[in-house]
Image (cartoon, rainbow, N blue to C red; front, side, top):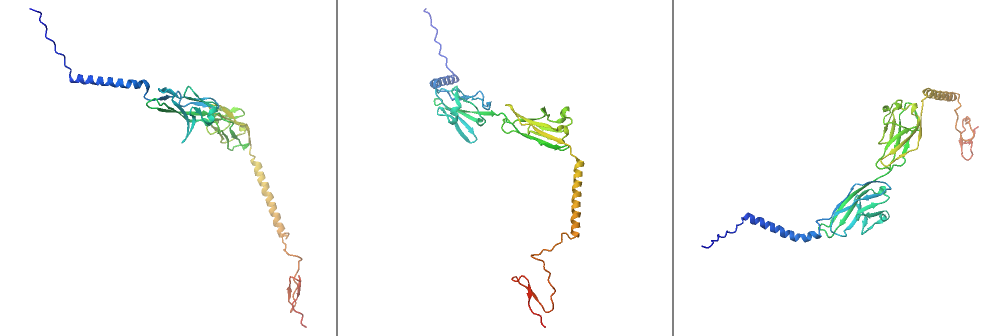
Length: 324
């Protein structure tokens, strides 16, 4: 007998769930083949980053406003810088060049970052870096940089009373308006630093004052002779400090006896003047008649005679004659 051949096995049949999974895989593969050429030439969006979005610099120094393109496929994206002041917007960099006076003291660095030389207090504010990448799917991106400029204080204005009587209160003022951040104030007497409260230092136990470092006031509730001296104030912030000119304050004794004696002398003088005026009135020194021209006493008028006065004659004349 010849060798008998085993019957062929039937091909395995796929279940419905397996067929659906295979179809999903084929669909994803086709989608990937369609998108792959596009992904080679385009990213989803141009993206910007910054190493410091809140730079702080001193006045007259150099400031770098960082703006970095982290992803893009556009070879030459359009770069713009703007300064935002309230509702107003001005161009700093536009059409591949600096605008206005920025041309002499600003430049681009590393393709997109902005460098400002000789920064002034007027340069503080918000700057916007804008990038347009036409070859990307989302073609635009922007980032804001908030620049802060610190300014050294100038010499503050000090007001010191030149003289104060013992036991009275006194206030010394110190103010500076240019520095940023706002400065704090310290007071000195004869080169000695004054504490915030005289009670905190035994050296000033005979004084009674407080120093407000925020407002710059030095307040004496009751001055003493030992408070006499030369005073000055120093305004300080994290950039530097400035000092006002020294001013002398004298504390003098109030001579109560002298003041009372002076008042008594004034009262006595006024009393003597009043008595003298009264005596003069009694003796008739201040009695007089006001008359125009020569004094004239009207004569007694006889019976039957009338006198009249005329402006032309300047004297009296008879109006009727005697009757015999």
